[in-house]
Amino acid sequence: MNTDSHPPLLKTPKFQVLATWMWNMIAVLLISILLTAVLPENTVLDADALQANPRLVLIPLITEIIAVGLVPLLFTRLNRDPLALYGLQRQGLWKSVAYAALVVLVFFAVLSILAGQVTTSVYLPAVKISTLWKPVAAILAMLAYGPLEVFFVVWLIHNTDRLYNSSAKIFSAGLFVTVVLYGVLHWFSQGIYALILAVVFLLLGLIYKSTRNAIGPMLAWTLMNDFIWALVAILLAQ
Image 1 (cartoon, rainbow, N blue to C red):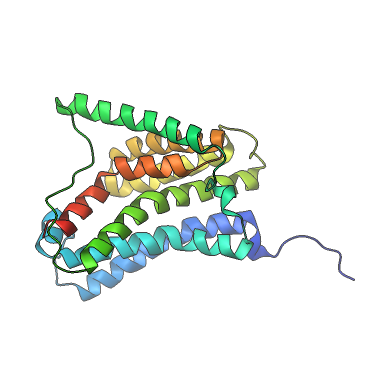
Image 2: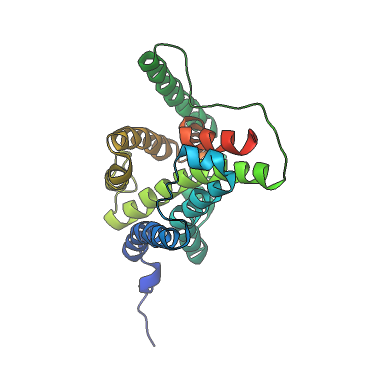
């Protein structure tokens, strides 16, 4: 009788963490290659292009869901992990929200100082809904670039901590490694802004680690992520 209690490779933290990071990079590359092949030559998915054709918003939205959220959700299902492991629970909720609110206030205060006037990331245009898919896409954009992106980071923190046996520590190996890699990967596409992202997610990760609740960080990042509100404005203002 086989008494080996070790989990199969597919369920080990090492495999799952590596697979998640690799898929994040590979999926973005594959989608970029596909878009290069099917879109007109020299097409750039910048703000002007998205405003001219709001349907193009579906490209970054689908990319975010596939490259960021898909694999962690599949592994969570495969492992039959309770969502409480990733901070989706009532325990610690009010502390999580309070700490996250403080981060948001400081973030917006810094933005206001730099801009010379009171400002935030949140921008809601005069809503002009002409078709049903636009408000649906706007809601998906808020979920994908807000809670789902935080879930991606929290999932990696938790499972990297399992890999290094550092779950009990607040400033843990999982938190440090995840935030550093997250910042490095964004450096190639967003330059110096990646440092701001790393600092923000370090703070949000510390909130999750100290409260065992990720709802506050999810709400905070939804408010702070200006890309969400840029997409919402494009979708709802036309």
